[in-house]
Image (cartoon, rainbow, N blue to C red; front, side, top):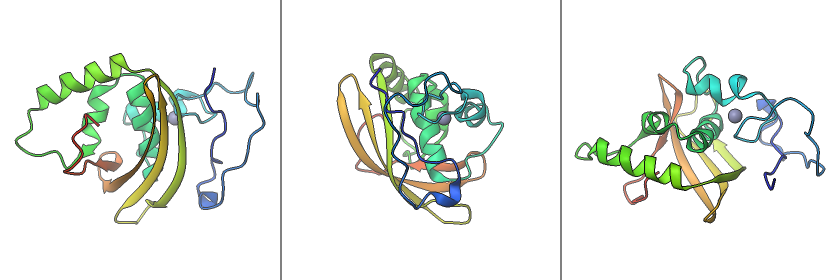
Length: 164
Ligand SMILES: [Zn+2]
């Protein structure tokens, strides 16, 4: 398992500090790990956001929830938490493309590298993260805006032609 077990501390107030460095092997035999990499059971972590039992307080929480939604092929959640999609876009086509993408891709790890703004009360937030998949790794700096339903939403930039 190449999954990076290191995760930022859960105390949100400490977010701007550097995430602690975990030693290899730490986390085994502990609380089950959510797909986003945090050492919390899925139901208490991203599951609560996926099932709309809880809103993401911070932009990076929504980012994590989107990552684990990709992992779990929760296409509806990915679509619902994306904004900036043009009116003319065929949502059925998008759904089909997303479904094909998540089914063909193995998501092997998420590393949140940087978070700028994105705290309660902020009008936007940016999260820089790196995702490892079976077809390679990529790093992205995504923009998020506050949202009534989910807490935050991912802003799909006009030049973003991928299925994300
Ligand atoms: Zn999670």
